[in-house]
Amino acid sequence: MRNVVLGGLLMTGIAASVPAQAQDTVRIGLVQPLTGSVAYNGKSVVEGARLAVEEMNAAGGVLGKKIELIVEDGQCTPANSVNAVEKLVQKDKVVTLVGAFCSSATAAIMPVAQKYKLPLITGVSSKASLTEQGNPYFFRAAETDALMAEAFAKILANDLKLTKVAYIGVNDDWGRGGVEEFSRDLTALGVKTVLTEYFDHGATDFFTLLTKLRAAKPDGVFVAAETQDGSILVKQIREMGLDTKVFGVGSWATADFINLTGEAAEGIHAAVPYASSMDTPRNQTFVQKYQAKYGIKPGKYGAAGYNALNIAGQAIARAGGTDAEAIRASLAKTSYEAPNGVYKFTDKGQAYGFDAVLVRIEKGEPKVIASTPVDAPH
Image (cartoon, rainbow, N blue to C red; front, side, top):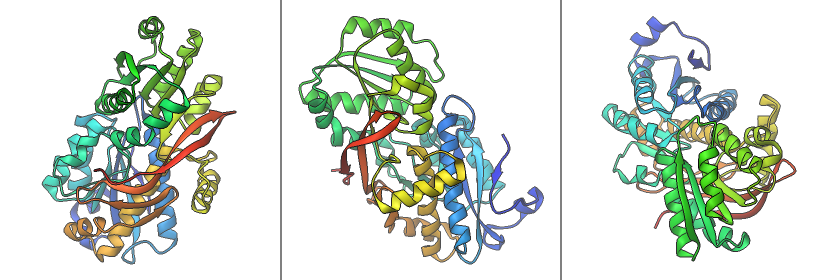
């Protein structure tokens, strides 16, 4: 996969030899899955990031220079993501890193960012423990599984009248984290767990898993899965005639997911930090710009890329230079007005203050049925 470079192409030899402070652009490195089973989502992050960079550059860039976005394909795997970061740091001389989508991949690049003393922002990775590792260079501009479960478990249990729930998740840190957090909070509300199953990224045949699901007879199924995996799973749930309420976390309020899932998406619920249907003037403007550029409404991951790059750009501008320690200190003072609310960071680098929503898919659109601000962790 070729690098995606905004702000013009530079000769590799020159780029490798010029120190960051002497470059004619301000380089930000972005690691996302551009291939593999979550490529749909990674490409959406890149789209949002590009739009943010385009807007910032149109307004004059930062530090009197254009922002140059350099994108690497981490494939959502730890090893590939680490290799991508090493290239971005050593060869491309980026001043800030954004990535790496999957929580396991982000966990792998966190110590690399710390080794090089470079700020790292994730707009996606939601495994709660990432901000508990004491890494001063790491900032999460996203919800955690724990915060979403705390915000919406009671609404889900009461509104969907759940008594018995099955939990299905992709077999990685994010999938297991989502299942653990939601099952804990729903169990505390008296909802019985009747099944817990995990599947591998890229799975296409869920017959054996769904046979177990039918036997468990739940009245609700919680799913932690992204666009490609989730759409196949939801369609097969409906194809097997399983008449159960489906809810989950991930990309479920995005146009890509809804288009891929088709009629099977109707009536499902999703707890997400962003939906294109959020009714605020700032979001309406963002949706218009995104749709004009890409021909599709933004979803959770388009917004995540947009927010993460704006947060990075604003921090660099406040820092007054590209010194990593100054950028890190500036990030800690973030107060960014996003399409979905205001982002600030705790001392541990966890974002709070923005809004999260529970949506129900109705006639192909994510209808907001509940909204809550994401508070700082207790």
